[in-house]
Amino acid sequence: MAELAAAFSPRTKLIILNTPQNPVGKVFSPAELAQIAALVQEHNILVLSDEVYEWMVYPDPARTVEHVRIATLPGMWERTITLGSAGKTFSVTGWKIGWAIAPQPIAAAIFAAHQWIPFAVSTPLQEAVAVALEEAGERDYFRWLSTMYQAKRDRLLGVLHEVGLRPITPDGSYFILVHTGHLDVPPEPGYRRDYSVSRWFTRAIGVAAIPPSPFYSAEHADLTDNLARFCFCKTDEMLDEAAVRLRRGLG
Figure 1 (cartoon, rainbow, N blue to C red):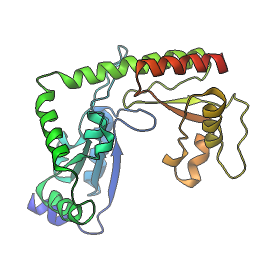
Figure 2 (cartoon, one colour; figure 1 turned 180 degrees about the vertical axis):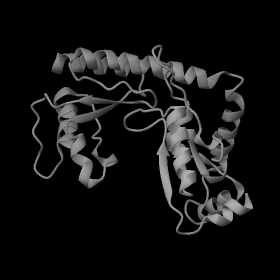
Figure 3 (tube, rainbow, N blue to C red; figure 1 turned 45 degrees about the vertical axis):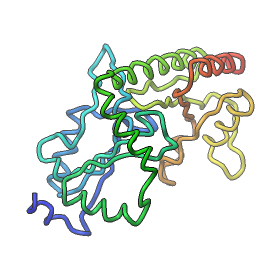
Figure 4 (cartoon, one colour; figure 1 turned 90 degrees about the horizontal axis):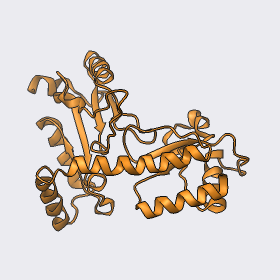
């Protein structure tokens, strides 16, 4: 461990991995993670693995879909920072509480920076998250979370297919991308088309959509011009009302 920590320098490169991924909902397979692991070890790269949607993974009868922490692969613990989120896991985003899992030398650097950036959040909320993590296993909470969100995903997917938006089925997270190229919504002056389409959905259809272009660099933002993103972490009643409005406006 000490030898590997010493091998890292301020000029060591870092890659960011996001699985399950936002915005497209991709879950990297064990084989894909093994390829990434081989490359980062070959080039002595650190990995910041954003896994905040780790419990929102949806089984597929046609193929295996599972979340695997890249830090658990051989040779990866020593060079990986894994990020988790109480906000996503326990639906308390306003609490702004998460966690970083890393080997001691890297964790020490994170602690030092943390002291001077956010410093701390509410202690009672931290205690509540600790209790939630302790209770989750006994209450089978994580399985329930995945099952609950998969039902909401499928509920929204059905109506999106029905109204011709050709959704991309996510394997994880709680967002769905849809195709919008067939909609007669020109880009507004000074805005990318996905922004204009999202505003159109909100104003004309009454269902809020999210432009995905902020996830892309300026040189690749055009890839999202004909896409929009919907979120299904809502009550069933709200999803049903969205279905009514989508059918009325696009059906």
